[in-house]
Amino acid sequence: MERGKQLCAWGAAVLIFVVLMVVTPAIPQSEEYHNFADQRELFLGIPNTLNVISNIPFLFVGVVGLTLCFYRNYFRLQGEIWGWSIFFLGVTAVAFGSSYYHLKPNDARLVWDRLPMTVAFTSIMAIFIIERVDEKTGTTSIAPLVIAGILTILYWRFFDDLRPYALIQFLPCIIIPLMAILIPPMYTHSSYWLWAAGFYLLAKVEEAEDKQIYKWTNHIVSGHTLKHLFAAMVPVFLTLMLAKRDIEPERRSLLQKWKIYWIRIKENGLKAERLECEYSEVSTTV
Image 1: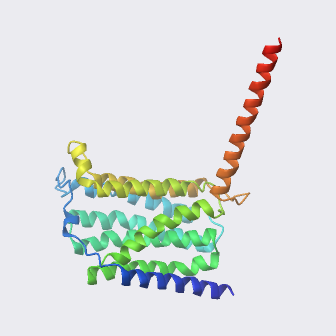
Image 2 (image 1 turned 180 degrees about the horizontal axis):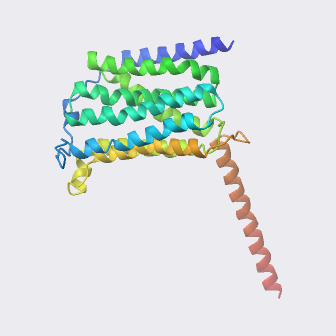
Image 3 (image 1 turned 45 degrees about the horizontal axis):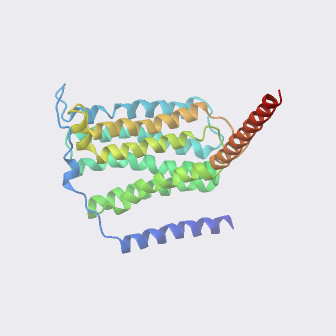
């Protein structure tokens, strides 16, 4: 029965993907993408210096995350260890792949920038399935999701069409916050997922406004450099979450917790109004 549901889910996902590929036009990679605002060589003879060295935080947080995966027992399920290890390997690889690309931006090098990011995106999806839906389904989906992500990079490189890659990149940005809000978590500190999603959203805005931010800051820092720093905050928040979290005693979704919190605020407000009315009556009587 469970296997049938899994096959239906995968079948539906493939069908939706095929329909989107049929009804939407191809999205070629623009050469203008490589024309970043800040192309200064500031020191050590490093071209595009700030866009290169702003990738260093990915290396540090990736190594710390991998250490957490194996140094202490932060996980209840074996699949979690695999998922998080692949995620932090992807984050660590971003430091090298993105730096390599920004030394000489072009399509051939962009592959090595996007590849580790895609591995990180897809492994996060598998982690969420493990923690919030079903361990077995999530664990068995790690390899297919990561391979699907890699295939989107190859498809873009050989057919100059970004549609599959865009789907793999932006779908988790929608699904993960929704799942974080609606599905009861296994662990505490679930709100860190939303902080991570918020910083990633800001990173994408800064990427889109690369030249405008460079102008606003009087040519001090570009939007793309800030994009790297804000994107690095995503694994930072997730690493903090792993270090702080514990088993959730009451498995309530964030939405349920917010509802309870809102009800308590309303009840406290009503109590305060009653006390104020009683105090006014006493004052009038006296």
